[in-house]
Image (cartoon, rainbow, N blue to C red; front, side):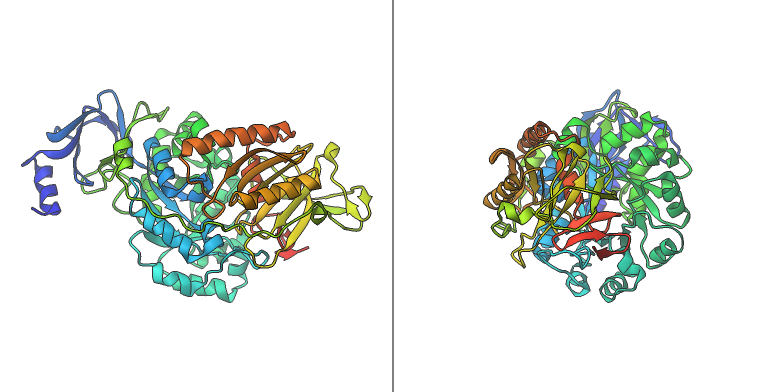
Length: 562
C-alpha cells in the first residue's frame, strides 16, 4: 500500500493511525479556540483532527495543549556555536520543528563547501532545516572574506529540495545603486523568495528595495519602522537574539490583526542563552507576558511564518500537513513535554539514529604572526569611536579626544575607551586595522574571537597590546573560537574548529565553556551581558553607523572607509 493510500485509510478510520495523541486540547489558529480532540498521524502527516481516533501507538496528552511546531524564520546556525546536528538536539525539544537558515557565516570562510555542508546536514536532522542561499559573500567590498560567491555560484543550488530562495540581502546600498553583482543575484531569483536586511531604511529608498522583489525583513528596531515596512508589503520578522534584541520594541505591533504578516526569528542565539532563557519558546511566553494576544503570538510562531516563506505543508494542526506538533503545558508558559517533527518524536532515540556529515573547513585560521606593536592606532587630532548600544547591533559614531604617545592614541579605561582591531585570518593579505570602541567596560587584558560577522576575521579588543597579541596567537593555535587573556595568561577559551565558527562538542559542553568565558570577561571589568557576539557585530559594515573591518573603520552611513 502506498503512503498516500495509507493516509486516506487512516484518516477514514479504516485502519489504526500510526500515532494518536490522545486527550489533549488543540489550539486552533484559525478560530482561536481550544478544542479537546485526538490528533491522528500517519507517517510524517496529520490525518485526523476534531474527533476520536485509534492508533498503533497512542500517547496520552491529557491536560496538555497541542500547538503547531514553531518556525524560526531567520537564523545562522553557526551562531549557536555548534554543528547543525547539535543545534537540532538543543532546540527541537523546545518546539522548533523548522529552521530557515542562512549559512553565510561558514560560506564567508569556505564558500560553496560550507553551503553544501549545511544542505547535506539538513536532510539528516530531526527538525526540518531549510536553507536560503547566501546572497552577500562577502557582505561588502570593504572587508576580506575567505570566499566570494556570485550569482553563477548560487543558481545551480536553487532547486535543491531544502532551498527556499535567496538569503538576507544585506548590501542594501548595492541594491539601490544597482551594483552589477547585486543585480545579477536579484535577477536570478526573481519570482522566488528573497529575504531582506535593511536596518533604518525608510521612505523612497525602502520602496525601491522592496520593488527589487525583497519580501521579508528582520532588521526593524522600532515599532514605527516596522509599521512602515508592513504597510509597504514586507513581512516583518520580530527578532530576539543573543545581541540583537528587538522583541520589546516590536511587541506593541503584534495583534490579531497584524499577526498574519509578522513572524519570529532569533538570527544569532548561543547555547548559554538557550539554556538560561530559551529559543522561540522564550519569545512566545515573553510576548504573551507583554500583553500580546496568544492567538497572535502562536500564529506568528508557525502559521504566519509558513505562509511568509511559502511552506504550504505546515503551520497548522490539520489533515494533510506535516505532523509538526509541540505539546505544551499552558499557552502562557510554553513549556514543552513532547515534540513531534514530521511525525518523529524528538527524543534521545531519534537523535541517536541520525546519520552525520563530516565537518568541513578545518584549520581555517591562517592569521599573520602579531606583536604588541601591531595594535598601535596612529592618528592626528580627535578620533572616531565605535559606540556600543547594548542589546543592539546598531552602533553610534562618536568622536573622542585621547592622549597620544609617539603618535599612538592610547586606550583610556577610565573613560571606557579601549583598542579594537581586526586581523585578517584567511591567509589572503595579512591586514590589521585598529580603532577605538566604547561600551565594553573592560579595564585590563583582552578578548578575541574568530566569530566576526560576516567575514569572520579575528576581532580583538583590549586595554593591553601584549594581551591582544597573545589572544590572537592563541586563536590560531586552537583553530579559532573565543579567548580571554590577562597578563599574558589565557583565562578561558572555547575552540571552534569548524571554520572557526562551530564546536565539535555537545552543546552542553559549549554552554559550560561559555559560562567560564563570560565569568572571565567580567573579571576584566566587562559589563556587557554577551560580550563575544557583541564584539562579532562590530565588524559588520552593513549595520549603521560606525564599524571596523580588516581594511579599516567604515562609515556605514556614507558606505565608505574612513
